[in-house]
Image (cartoon, rainbow, N blue to C red; front, side, top):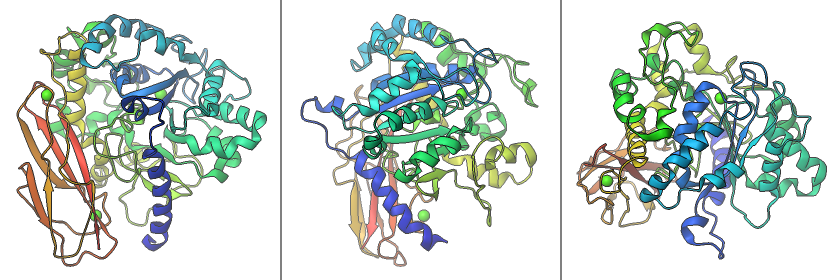
Length: 491
Ligand SMILES: [Ca+2]
Ligand SMILES: [Ca+2]
Ligand SMILES: [Ca+2]
């Protein structure tokens, strides 16, 4: 099985990589040209509202090309509907804190810039994709714009129907440009929350092998997080932490954050929550994946990063790695009715929790870092630069891709790393064993020092990879973490 998957994986990996590494166009300043472009489509569920607060605090990291309201199997106009303009109060709140955010990073977009791109997509029914809407046209416009060759991450926090409508418009009006447009697209879907990926996108655009991540492991940070996250991580989502770090005293945007209200959600165990607990951000992994953390997650979905880790299942479609031996992925949709994690929580929990832990770990392993990062940005809404923390900048003294023979010592150095606040830094070098193709483990010397080393094991085979992450955490408040991944290929 592995022998069949590897060549496919490598070719698709190359597809992700070539676009991640696209050289910046000459006309733009380097820091702008290197930014990742994103378009959000969202069904405005209460947890999308929570995700939008966090998303807006990271808009300095990307070029946001659209924030578009869509429908889903759960929500459409008139049915459990937050309203066509549900996102606008969040943009108004963003405007309030914007003058303070730019003290921390001048790259934050203006409120006007975001408002111009916040549009209504296809919302009239589940899976509706007949109507041409302002939201679908925004996607069309961004994809057809030849002045900017960078890829666009199209995120579905709800159904894929508005994206499908946009692609259909392109198919109808510019059939000759479909291949060119497809090259620009990266899909990240939170489940398939309607049928349009299966009924339209795959049949008409499947031929172009668009890199596609469909996530189910997001469920670790959705409504059932209190069953899935290890106890040690849960304290960062509990009411006392949320109130102190996000909900209270952090300005207009964070005060809109909709933490838990017991009794408001129908899942069993709802009453285990207290007011102020984190409620759910099931859609956040779609954008967490694209934050430049140094984990290089945009280079391949199986590297793993803040948005989880995915495995190639078919074509160029990457789903959650299921840890159960002999498991066969279902044909068709990967969603609430079929995806492993959701089915596990429905039918087997609390049995086989080792399988559950392994399945959701690519998501929950970053909880502390993610929540502290959120807390720092909440501070950015109200505090001066001096009175807030900013993440370390991890730089290595050598290339990010190295080659070494079995038995050879590999020297690793984070000389060049700094912190914008002058904070003391802690280093931790570790092997991301699930992400690398070498099956064994390595032993890292001085793993908690700025300079470390390891010996390539004698049984490592030519062509295998070893992934080592340099994790750097500062002593500021809250502690912030950034990374640099090094990939060693065995010669
Ligand atoms: Ca949603
Ligand atoms: Ca710092
Ligand atoms: Ca491995």
